[in-house]
Length: 415
Image (cartoon, rainbow, N blue to C red; front, side, top):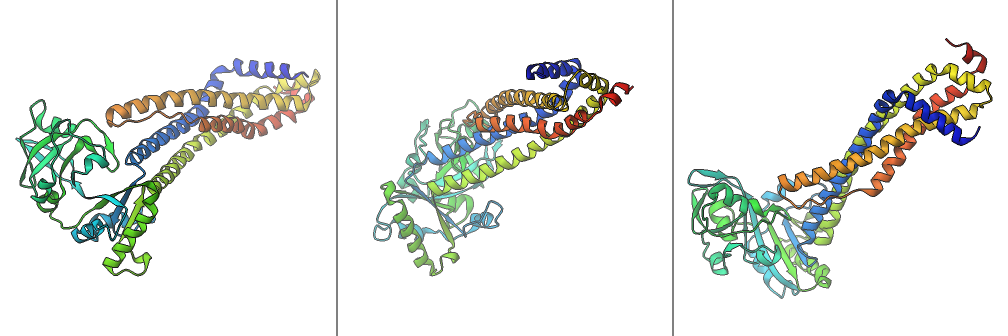
């Protein structure tokens, strides 16, 4: 029997029971759509996060207090927020060229979330205490007003710059420059408003208040230590040596001889990028695997429907065998029907997944106010289509085998 005839017969059988075929396809469609959607959103998130990290430049080093966590669930992640191993003396020592010769700039950072108020309006922004170097390191410049100066840092001046969302929540359409906002019983004069910037590494600039780090330490957080040192070196080739110099200097200051006992850790952009790629990649893979379970459920549904179809078409099978069709012809026909269902479901799922992913990226860009890039996972789409076809073969093989084994005489007598 010619293969083209087997194809036509399989197509006619599916079309005859098109309602059942559509419902059977639906399980595969949902599974593949979920996989494409999760993969697209995951890769989009990874692209956005890595883009923010890489925007700091390859010449940036971050020194973090506390023990280096072994993973995102390690208690050290939380402990690092309260560690006081980085203080003013560490800052002054690292600034000395004799200790870290290739260090170009170093910026201490403190941060937290506090309630900010102005004439009855309140908002809980991210409070970032930094130095004027933040303009170059994070490429943040005020849209109106001005940034604080080195004199403001030394004087612990009660001044602040606010993000666009903070300005809108507290001041609306009114002028913010020169007004005083209240944080923890302290009045800070607004000297600048930041342009719409979105996410910048570990904080959202639009929902932030930036003050001199000395002001944040004394008047807002009441601490004497820092949450981060952000270091810039003169050249990318100096990264490795500078990391070693920082580690040796801090260990000498803290009397540490065993590196495993470090009360700080150092991250470079390359290490941070690699870590984030691993974390987001594993998370995306896990979510996609969970979504793929629906393909197995859909496969079981296909097997059930095909077994029912074999029973319903017993006389047809007997008649075809009586007219010369071989067991192999019958097997191939039913396998083609199963694969056609799953492959069609896979193709539809890819199209729907791409459409939903695009809609999700636009919605996230609008709602979360970040530059979310739409990413279509081509490799995942191809794998999804191949898996859906494989599901048809695996779950359609048993019903097809059962159909091929039927005796022509018994099949023709079947009522």
